[in-house]
Length: 148
Image 1 (cartoon, rainbow, N blue to C red):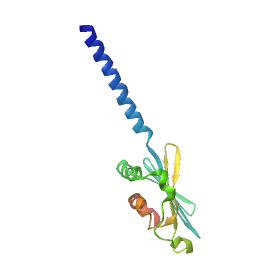
Image 2 (image 1 turned 60 degrees about the vertical axis):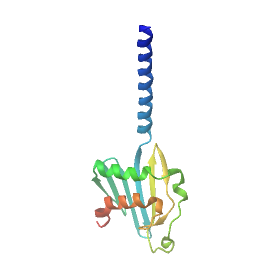
Image 3 (image 1 turned 30 degrees about the horizontal axis):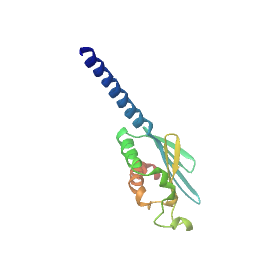
């Protein structure tokens, strides 16, 4: 009886240990690797790429790099995690000024698990409701870079 209790305890601990490792590895697998915002119109091409710890800005082919805090990156990825990435390309833009060059055509691309998810095009400053929080957070991080 004594050996049975010891064996059962060891087996139970082994099973629980394996289960917690599986949950941990599942969470680490679903990490967002990169988030990009591209804004284009005739004569203007801006691409802002965020990855863990850095922001790369390309404004009309002039590239600048800037470090971002882990807190800023975490906040941005939290907003991106709330978006249903499989449906991001089918989101409807609330306005169409980009059709006549009255606004920059913007696209958000999220890279997760080596897969890129690209939004439908929308007017700069007026994203679909589902992308608004992420777009606003990206704008906070790139605000100083746009004017340079």
